Length: 302
Image (tube, rainbow, N blue to C red):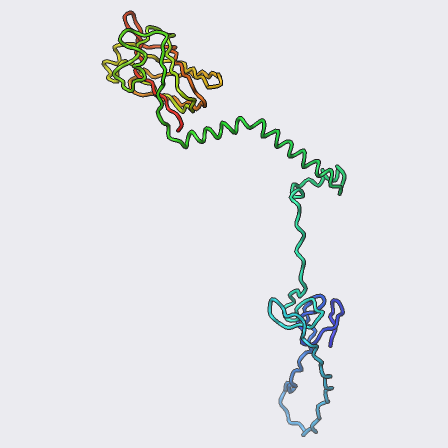
């Protein structure tokens, strides 16, 4: 038996590591005796025969008693170890089970130690008050931001849906030219038009149920043919006065290019029941000519 130079615990000669502290013991193993070598011959010369000298006897090492290896085997190398060892005698791996660290509550992960120390140290009440304040702030923020979140959800749904056409069930106008009634603006064809006598005239369209208005497509002029298009005046500026089911009114100004073809305006307004189109500007208006409003189409979210 020998002693560990680090902690002084008794170890066996065959152990590579201390069972108490895990110190490497290789340098403590008995040194192997090297065979005797004849002295180097410095210079050959004739010598007298010498009397042989017997080698000095070496003391025999006491027998080593092996400790019973009835402890738990190492989980790394599988070597059997005596009871009471903390480290494996072959690879120095720990033989004792280490308990896992206790789980940390979620409120400790908020990194507020200074605030906890300032509000009472280890008492749980200051921490609970902090948590309640944070929750209250989240509730207030959610209440204030709820309208914006609702609008964001509606905008996303608008972009993901395919617009569907919807037609009015009621159409009236402030004025119309004989032969060009306001109903011609929503008949689905562009070779007929609503003739408005002057700027400021309006047409109103009613619907049988509230819907989400995604957009409006407008055709100006008397026809899509360029020659016929220039025969009458064309609207270049409009106001879309949109009324919801709760009576809320939204006015959207719309600018139109003076050219044939459809022109789209995106809206995104919910619970629409009535839309009024007010003419605010026109091109080519002259005595004997009127404003030709070719077609207007409304699109809803399915």
